[in-house]
Image (cartoon, rainbow, N blue to C red):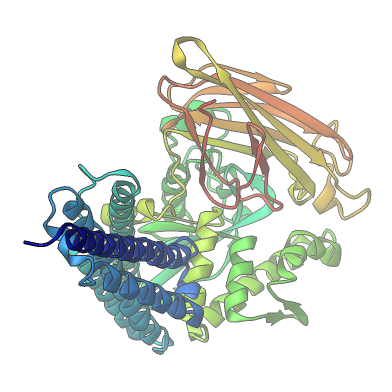
Amino acid sequence: MLRAPRRRTVVAAVLLGLVVWAGAVAYLLVDAANELEAGQDELDAVRHGATTSTLLDPDTGRAIDRAGDHFDRARSRVRSPVVTPLRVLPVVGRHVRALDRVVSTSQGAADLAGDAVTDLRALAERPLAAGPERLAVLEELAEVLGRTRAGLDALDPGSPDDLLGLLGDAVADLGEAQAEASTSLARADQAVGAVARVLEGPTPYLLLGANNAEMRAGSGMFLSATTLGFDRGALQLGEVRPSEEVVLPAGEVPVTGDVARNWPWIDGGRDLRSMGLTADFPQSAALAADNWSRVPGGAEVGGVLVVDVEAVRRLLEVVGPVEVDGVSYSAETVSYELLANQYARYGDDSGARRDQLGAVAEAVFERIEAGSWELDEMATALVEAVQGRHLLAWSADAEVQEALADAGADGHLRDDSLSVAMLNRAGTKVDYFLDTEAVVTSSAADGGRRAITLTYRITNRAPPDGPRYQLGPFVEGLAAGDHRGIVVVNLPVAATDVTLGGARQTLTGPDGPTVVVAGEVTVRRGETVEVTVDAVLPEGVDRLTLEPSARIPGTRWTVDGEVHEIDHRRTVSVAG
């Protein structure tokens, strides 16, 4: 039998050992958590700022590698022999095993991301000049997306149930991020398949050029049109024609649905320039496709594409400057040249001005068809153009249309959309000189609902002098530089108590998945005018999806005191 002093020494040694072991365990687990957080921060930075171009940037690969290193260190800490004994304990062991699973899942995600980036780099280096080469790249891209998604879905971060504190939150957050990434990959795969289906042909599309100096709802006015053909990945552009030269006889194209109900005083089917009355693009696109099928020299088309000056600018960033009739058009100069300076250059010679617009579009198209551009840069430019409604697409093919809708490229409003537009009714090109601001304030209403007030401010900074074609006047009662337009506001579906102030109301009613109200307003040169709309949101709606207007310059939004630069669709809270 041990003597008492010796027993105390042994007990003290055991207790000291337990304290040291517990300290080592605590250190390893805390360090593992820190390494896990650092690795997830690296991946989150990659994920949240991801574009095709950034994914192919060497810095992205290095960030993924750093994340993998952090996860490796975290796993070595969690699987240390010092920590292993905890795994058999009933409560603590469950948490250690859960932490190990989170680390392993994160490591697996980093490995998949690294492999996908490597595959994307290889695809980006493939030639793209010939049509079949483009289709082959799209096919391989679909394989990369599918393989990455399958690998991601196979990872199992476990359940947050019965896990305490931050660990439970970490498991839940990882599961949500995994589901979000899987959904994004599925949508990307669907979009790639849709693009390949369209490029394969042979069904052509209608290509419309939208002028942001003369606005419609959610787009510039459709001032030029052509047929865009597809043949096994190759693009074939027809003659670009001014819209004013392809106007049909009155009543030839039937107008139905919300467009007919809301705009009965406009024969919206006969003239492409009279379309775009609604920010819900599929309605305008279907009407434009019907119109083009009846235009002499037009064609039956399977869809409609709209590009505006901002979309051309983004394409010039990819293909480089083009020169037309001695004038250089670059990403830095094209907006000013096409929205303002061309009117000064050609004055009221509209024929020369139209030729110039067509020539610039054709020059950019020739560069695109030649394939002298980088895949990642082109993909990023197109995505950014889509986000601002500068590139819109609609297809009569249900499968393609679904992919366009998922990608947000179809310009379709949502049932919680808030869209503000001003349709040019002056016949001038003054929209380029209008500054617009939308201020939204919310408050509590009866029945737990939310009331909102939208104040839309329009400031006319048109110059005092310039070509009549640009500044007018073409409408009785206006002077040069004055502007007249119809402010169109789309509100969430089932919004009630809708009132409009500061403008002569012209319509109210349903518009696609929304409620619409509109009124005519005159903004004299140098003046600022305010239009207000009040409404009560449906029960349970405490968020709004702000829709970009495609205006140049863009509309500045403020929602309950928070400023938003809306260059893409954004969801904001009005919960109070």
